[in-house]
Length: 244
Image (cartoon, rainbow, N blue to C red; front, side, top):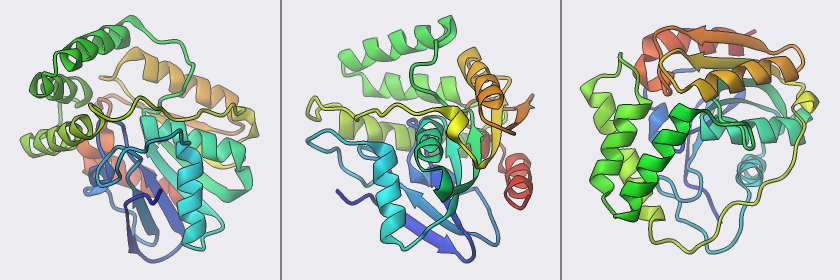
């Protein structure tokens, strides 16, 4: 399997991992001058097809980085991408120098009632194959109050593509490996949005407690996708952290 990806810029390597609501196009408004930016599509997202057998997203990303001849890199990761980024940083700590988590997910972490209600609504719509309603639900749920109509349209396009690729795919899923957050040695920043589900605030708090030396930031203006909702606010925050 080869992941679809883009590479732009020049300088130290920075890998950008997208949310499950999006694909690598979510990083179009993101800026990181002085870095070589690598933006992959996970399997079943964007231009990367669904596989027909079990896979591991973290191993996919590491294989891509290896193929580009990159030894050490930074990670900026959103939501599901954050879950993958945490696994990479924990399983291969010497490879990751900095880790920025934007409203990160974490497999096995206890959910909250607001997130459970959304999951039930989305599942019911997908069972009826009402993709348009499912897309509208996701756009309404995951974007905070600062999102523009243009941003909403981009998220709708990305989410619709993911649904269309995945809905009739073979019944296979990713393989998950256990990892220990305390093994992470990368400089880590855990970011949450006040307009997001409570579970993502809880995860950011947990990561800040478990990852040695991790920093914690809460954004009072943000929903679940702050890099899309207000690039002019999130870009300086991330850039300053990456530069140390």
